[in-house]
Length: 538
Image (cartoon, rainbow, N blue to C red; front, side, top):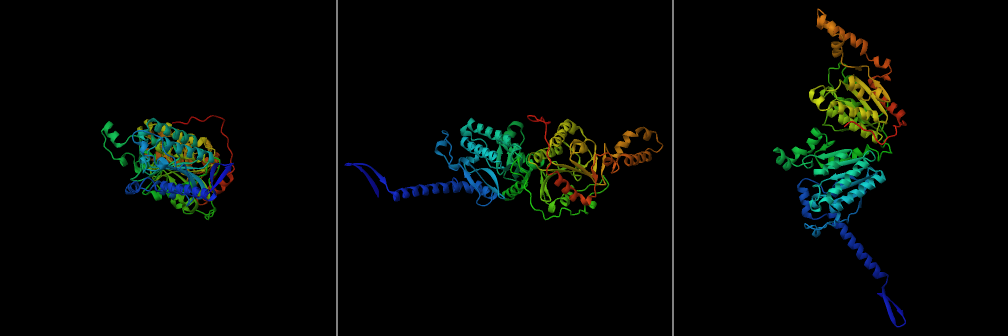
């Protein structure tokens, strides 16, 4: 039905009446829903079956696992590439191989992008990169975490240098967002070449065994150049990067567990560097005694024990998230809660290499301290350290330079810092592990503490070398001198008498003392000197 507009005897136009207009709009809406359904399904059932055959979820299934149900809002789902040549003009799928948007995790906003391996193998082209740039800019502006679900084959070769430039834009934004919003990379497939640098720039890297790999040059190139033959997992699989290289912070057997742990990590982090981590109501009494601690830690400094059991006894409900669990195992770094408040824990592990500091342990702890300081997470340091690991390999590998990274990180940190000396604290390692002299706000010690330049045996051999050598019974003389040194310089109250320890506490009261001290420090404010940035040791 139409309405005629007549001037004189001339028909000027025929204007559709409202029912026809509505019908036309409904047709357009129906077309939109059809396109959206096509976008939701992906390129083809065959491509989805191929993804499933590899034991992998689709990009949308991964997003559904990550975000609260029904919370995802997609950005630019209808984006297509504009490239021509090499057959690209005939294949222009919606999303261009990456799904971007935002949703919520435990009710808090989180931005996400997920490579869709079913489209161009998840390879990055110009349009693909532009979508990632946009969602990264949105995350930075909104002050919310960014999670990348990585499953891509690198740069899209058909688009040449335009694809490479897209990676540059991602790296630049990763760097700009560093220390501003939490950035988490979840590796769910291959990540080769320059693409691997984006995860390396983020705060946390998760990997899945058997299905995810990261390397700069693949096995074929390695074999061609060096003659070494190795599989993809042997070169850059989850176990390699979580145990050997330290690139990956977490490794899991399946995608579902991996993504659930990402959600747990996000629950322990603030939205951005202007906020504090979200507190929860704790059902674990703040004044709960830990009498079992007296039996967990032997007074004999030569006997080993598992520091994890100490941490479990101190924190809320014995629950904590250990980071880099399988790399540099002589030191533990973890996020936990004390009376519902998030804390970062750095602890020597006597069950591994006697808890000494070496190159890898120094790097691991320094990185963690910097992350906690960036995101307003208070630090609790548990000391039982006999010193730095001696050896030619360590010295030639740069233990001085790497140990200085941990020293720099602690000295630079402005969050509340509490250190607790359980047992041994010797030499430079004692200073580096957040001693009072480098700025710890409060330092406590157990009655089993031994703070000294070195162990009593080594000290006696140096100080009383001449007397021991001239003695009729060197062994008896050495034993007497060791006992004398311990009595004079290593008794539990020596440091406290000189103000280097704020108090010697009952181990059973550790949890209560830490909670009370952290509550006092919650309003701490510290300013660093005005500067563009520091120049930390590399």
